[in-house]
Length: 491
Image 1 (cartoon, rainbow, N blue to C red):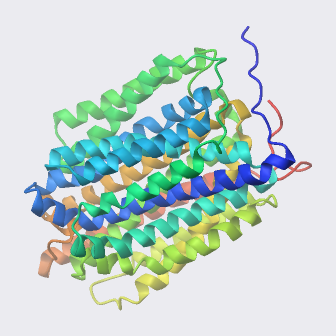
Image 2 (spheres, rainbow, N blue to C red; image 1 turned 90 degrees about the vertical axis):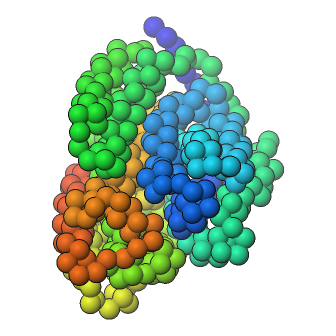
């Protein structure tokens, strides 16, 4: 029987201060960088399409390619961090993301830009997969919630900066600079992180090649089939992709249950708190992020706003989420992750139902007002749920579990994007749906009414998904008693 791998070295009190500070700064900076890139690129898409003479369906792949690669690789790269060192893997992610950003800025064609976005996605997956594990390694369990709260702040601030800078940079400097902006951030991260992040490699176990290939194949087939369905409608080809992806999943599960050191230890998911928390993250991402896309299409297609103006209406919610994240993270350290995470989903659910009441004559000030409710929900859910997940993972699988958490969230994000486009395309022509999303057209008359009805139906569907997320979040049970909040028993 293979020996049990040693637990990661715990920093001494003298080391802990600067060690924790470096981890917190770099994980927050990485989250901010990825968030900026997400919103800033969306605002630049119409300009990118015009200047590169690309079709709307090809331009949309600038986003889809990134989401697909991150969704497929995150779990695998979390395992790489477990084996080769989380600090090294995280800084490698920053390096690859920065190189991809430079390549995107210099891309000569839309195809070249999509390829550069794939490179960016590999770096982004390395960062997403290892950030949670770095925090779990660096911070004792009773202070992890606060650290996750700061990463939530990084996401909210990054989203706001992307919104505010996207239109300005695209107009004043050109769309290429929305990628060049990542270069100084990446160089700063490498300068700060070099020699300050832990580099402990775990060479005691091999890489799970069968699991890597099977999970990668399943996610690729499912994601590509779903995207192809949203783009071209249901046909034999994308149905075959979807069915093949579903068929591969049982094979993956069978292999992982037999592996002595699996890439994803599915046995750990038998724990109620861990399994329910991971599934809550997936359904929250699937249900809530579709709402953001649908709301943007409502504001652009029905109300005739530009992408920048539509996004600015959501800024209050992001700002409140940024302020609430660290505070709610501190609260979750007191052993109330179940209550905070569930209350956060409940806030999102209430906001979605409120958004579903918007029509063509609703005063626009209701959008930022409702967004404040979602901001509170985000600030509650993410730190509390992440803390619950990482506290239930064993130290040797921090990276794999953090990667699985990231994968479920990213697959949910990808499918929510597909959901938004699919619902839009079900009520109006697909080409028009893409134009609405990119902000290059708005709708009037009967077409507008049909589109609004479709958005309302999709919002109610998202609300049902959030109900599932709420049930899972509450169903995880109370935080363990008799030990520090969130602290897992040694396994």
